[in-house]
Length: 188
Image (cartoon, rainbow, N blue to C red; front, side, top):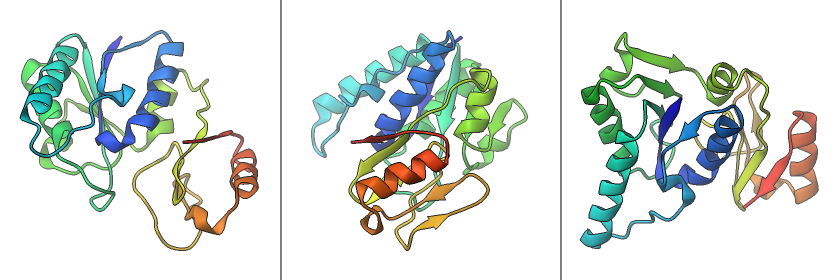
């Protein structure tokens, strides 16, 4: 299946990992933005127009849209994923939400819903793919079950959603935690 991945731009490193897992399972991911080359700066209308056009071309090349959402306070977002979601609905594409439903359109009966990334990958990769833990900054560790950022004390939720402040852990501590979860760690 040809999939377009939509999410907050700052999650592009995580989306590349998801793309790689989907490609390994035989899917095609059409989203070029996840390569990290669509950084937009305020006032740069020419780049903004180019990126929007590329995203629409990539969306037209897909046979499905997968939208990765975040908790309401998960960080800065410009809203492009919502436009892409609506555009895909208008095109009649199958659409899926991975993460919390954050607007009324996410509740439509034609929207496939997945609680988290492992839930989604279980269906579309046969559950055979284990993604590494991704450290995206000195302050955060995003697990594959990412639904937001936690900036408090180290916290591990038992339901598979895990967040921690890496200021409390050294590199060996992060690697040990990843190993205890049966995964690996990638530092960015």
